[in-house]
Image (cartoon, rainbow, N blue to C red; front, side, top):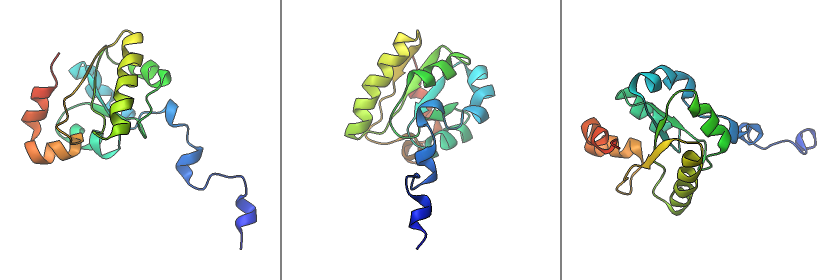
Length: 137
């Protein structure tokens, strides 16, 4: 009935949001990133929330696309970045690209072994201490 009013507009709110310029949870986690000296980059919004509750600084790209803009944002807070993207094919490809960008920007960057689970699932299955053990250079 009113479809003509939205012609040419994004169907969903997030489609008009430039994912390449924002990191979910950065504002909330900035003090913890500075305090701990590192950050974990994840894919979805549940992962940084779960890790933050355990005292682990984390942010999320919204989707699996990490950009140079993301690297620039992180540069203000730390030199150490761990990436823990989803274990699916898209996540594995994004992980390679993410590491490349991070290293080009001079970060000390490393992928966290994920045992085929995302961070929030691993937290539930294995607990906080097991995740902390994985965050080592």
